[in-house]
Length: 202
Ligand code: GRF
Image (cartoon, rainbow, N blue to C red; front, side, top):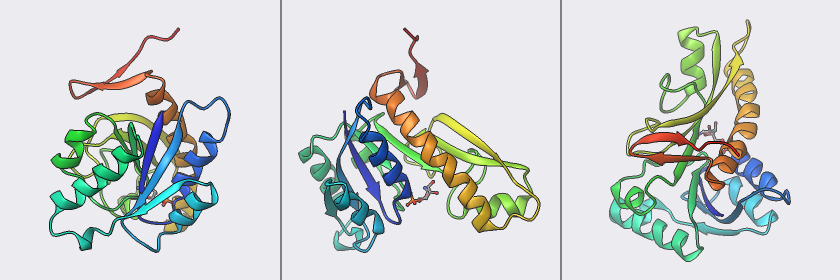
């Protein structure tokens, strides 16, 4: 199964996916990495792994529809079946999601539906929750609102600052995202009628 990974930043989740795909028994490969930020370190990670990269700066396009059309073209040209958002800081609309319906995943550093959007870890600390974590979900046009596939939980410890909590959650992100990609790539999990369906095991 060919993956397209969309990034805007450091790309540590991309790295986790690249590492997983390098294992001989993993049912997916990263066909292309697309960044909307030309300086994203994620692009270096892709190049080091020998994966094709594309930079599409959203500002260079006249409209979101034009940007999404270009995005779709690059992914289709690379033979991509599943799209993984990995620190990709743009919302995707109907033009994109229509073409990859039910085949777009995102990872978010909170236990959704709590703390959508930016600085989820800071929001969790400010709210004083004792459990935090990360969520992998199917993408819909909202921000971090799509159907939830899997979550991982970490404790919020006394004395945690944003950096400490972020690091604890990130470690779980790197475990959870490849696991979910494996589930969708093998058909064990899919989106049907807006709901996450789990296939019966063997
Ligand atoms: C991660 O925390 C991810 O959950 C969020 O953005 C961050 C990206 O980090 N959507 P990285 O670029 O994968 O290191």
